[in-house]
Length: 252
Image 1 (cartoon, rainbow, N blue to C red):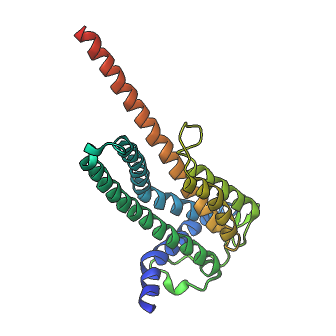
Image 2: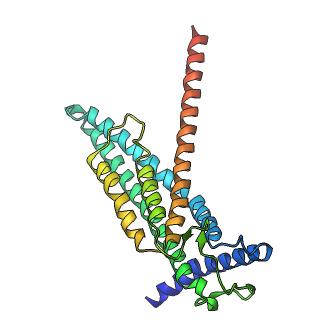
Image 3: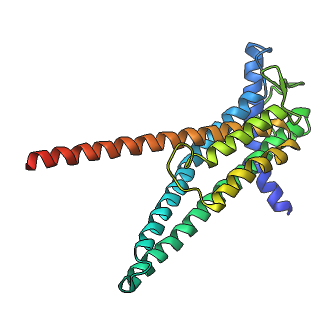
């Protein structure tokens, strides 16, 4: 347990803590009124999201491939001669499940750690209890940190407004494959869409709202990543269709 704690502190919390203190101090030197702990938290969220957006997109693509495989399997459901094809698609579906579960588990694990990094910074870092974790070259440590985001939300306390926004973001992210699309929403998907935002709201209500801000930024970037990915696919699909039509016209 001690090893895990030291691993967490040295590889995850310590770099962020030093980064946050450095960013805050640098801004405070220029304009003390503009210094706020929200900026390093937002930058941290962007950094983590940029790293894991490819993993999330890969997991999402894997889900879509699984749906395609399931549709192919339905074609051979009542076909006695299609046993080999059914076994082939079943094998692919199982492999897809393993890949999806691995990608999602990796993302959840690191998001979980990141949330607790932000929580510790708000609970201990800004109160001066973690100064022994500062690198030797980080000299300027503020005596007091401004914890108010937009001059309204105290990031050291749970805030209804930010938690509500977070719950909405979770709903939009989980429903991004279904909202505005003619896609059948399965029972499991409906359960996730209905329950996960509520659970998220309740869990983050007992955490400092700095963690809610972190997750809002992270999920927002993932939603943007999904939208860009879908737009690129639509553009490529239209381009392919136009190319096929032009080729057909040339052959005629």
